[in-house]
Length: 253
Image (cartoon, rainbow, N blue to C red; front, side, top):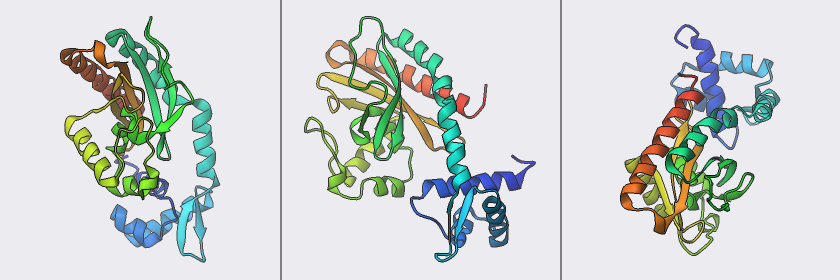
């Protein structure tokens, strides 16, 4: 983007608007992106003309327009993330001999979009189309740990936001923050029995160009059958696969 700064800045504005749950004033956009206000207003005018941004004049704020929704819908129809992830997940299953899956954030839940089952392994609750509370899953924790703190706070504003399945897992924002801090320190997320008793999962995030988590890759295994050394080998395979898919998402070989 070095030769097209205006295009890069316009995309930065769209990403910023997408991260907020409410429309944003132009002054806040200029401040957060460290851009001159004149440039921001010019770019917003172009984006409004093209339908990617809508100006709420009464509120003096800007939000995403219909064209942005149409673009997102086209992305869903093409399912490029699933296409990019299929073969890396197959290789991950071959390497670990355990079930692997790909999940995306959907509000404060995770939505499972791919499952690759290892031969002889039983089906899991994390089937395609299933939604689970993100703070209970390894995939969800891996993605939440890559979000800005204010976005995590917006997703979990009170104790009522913390759903449990088996009486384990974080139940408060401070507790969740402590877990996410460990995930960032370790470079991977681990859950053991919070989704399904006797099963554990290891996950790592897939990040886009801006460092935003677009997905989480995880391997799930019977906890009693895996030694500490074997788990470490699974961790390394999961991180390697997530790193590979991150490169693919960013269009790098």
